[in-house]
Each structure stands twice: as structure tokens, then as C-alpha cells.
Image (cartoon, rainbow over all chains, first blue to last red; front, side, top):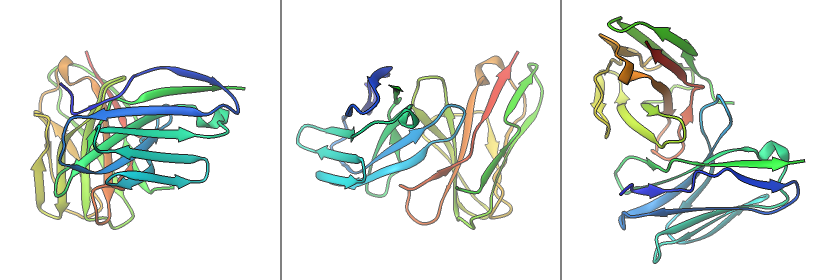
Amino acid sequence: QKEVEQDPGPLSVPEGAIVSLNCTYSNSAFQYFMWYRQYSRKGPELLMYTYSSGNKEDGRFTAQVDKSSKYISLFIRDSQPSDSATYLCAGRAAGNKLTFGGGTRVLVKP
Amino acid sequence: EADIYQTPRYLVIGTGKKITLECSQTMGHDKMYWYQQDPGMELHLIHYSYGVNSTEKGDLSSESTVSRIRTEHFPLTLESARPSHTSQYLCASSAGGEDEQFFGPGTRLTVL
């Protein structure tokens, strides 16, 4: 079993819709959770960072962590074609390295 | 935009050749990483370094080697390339914590 699992997609939505991305993880020691965005032929870039359970909002992006169910989510409001990318979730335990999911490909159609 | 560079961007090479993938960063970061990423798959850490003359193997076993003689430079070498080495190789660096890593654009390696 992979430590971090994501549906590979693609997830296709019309422009302006809410994009909902999910990730599950198996390591109960994870405390730090991240969402990275990766455009085609580019390296990933950090989008959101969350510590432990709860919500974090940054502009059009909201990240949620539910440690009880080992579930993390990313919501993108008012999606734009420029949001078309692969979104990677990652987690880590204190003192450990990041573990990445395989990513979900998102397509926002004009 | 993060200043981390990888060369070459694309490389097609025959089996048995020795190759070096270059990675340089101008941000003065102490921590640097090499990941391997196959299409649609997760990033796997293959090497990391916490500073000059410090290198460690990552979670994924790799036949490659790395060196860190200068802070800004973290090259990866394959002594004898094989088709199983075909993949994308991503280099990253971070300042302090592990979580905000700045990635280069990657090198897409194909071994025939």
C-alpha cells in the first residue's frame, strides 16, 4: 500500500467551478501536510502548507486536514484555465522526509 | 521564481554510457534533494544532502551517486546507464525545513 494515495484523474471542470481534490494517507505519524502544483514540463511548486488538523485558506485555495480519517483535501474556488496542472499532496512525520502522492491531473476548460 | 537549474533538460543515451545530471541553485540553500518521477507516479527521493560533503541515500534504492563539493552544486551520476534508469529526475533545494522545497524543471532521461 502506498503511504499517500491520490486519484490520478484527469479531473475536468468548467471555468469558474470549484475544484475538489482529495488525498488519503496511511502513516498516522504524519503531522505536516502540503499541496504542490506541477505544470507540464516543470518542477513542482509549493501551494499550501498545513500543520496537523484543520483548515487553511489562501486566496482561492483552501486546504483541509482530517487526521482522524487520514484525509486531506484541497479546494480551488473560481477555477481558471491557468489552474490546469497536476496537484501533488505530501505529508511527513516530524524529523522525516516528505512522502508524495502520485498527483491528480486537473483540466479547467474555458 | 526559484533559481534552481538543471541540465540537460532532455537526454537520450545508449546503454552502458556514463552520465551526469547537473543541478545548481543560487539561493544559498543548505539542503538539496534528487527525486525520481515516472509519469503519473509519485516522486521518490533517491538522494539528499544537508550541506557540503554531506550526502545520504533516500527511500528509493538507486544505482546513481551524488556529490556535494559546493553548496550550490549537487550533480547526480550514473556510471553505466540502463533502460531501467529511464525516468524524470527532479532536483530540489530548501532553506531550513523540509517542507518548502524549490524544484528545478527536471531532466527527462531516456536510455535506449
